[in-house]
Image (cartoon, rainbow, N blue to C red; front, side, top):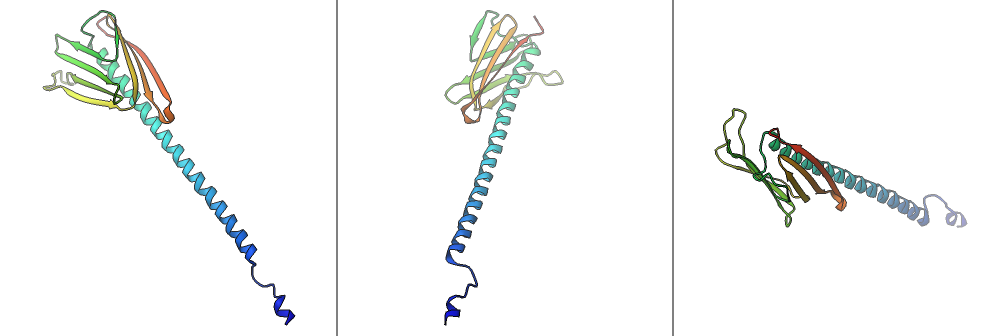
Length: 167
């Protein structure tokens, strides 16, 4: 009878619980690392997307100034909206910043590659992550300072100065 009581084959309850606790800890840490790396990847891709939008905005503004569009008034002016035009050719680009929705929209009517003026003005909304944009014009020079919201409430600031070829 004593031989049956001292049978030590198999696992005790403490050993089974120990293995379960270790398994849960390992799986929990793996899941945490996967979620953390996924979140990091998402933030990096959102940051890159926002920086690309910032470059697109600046490239559009620089491009419209370089084709000869200038502010209607050559007086020094600073603001969040900018109108560039070529009265002779009929081309224009009107940039408007809406602080309530953090969007920058441009309405434009430009010539195509064949030199023909578009029949209707086009409208394009660049981004909904614009914190602020400041245009400073003087003669045919345009200074642009753009602030964009990045993930984690960071702000990315870009600025440039562009001169019209007509200057």
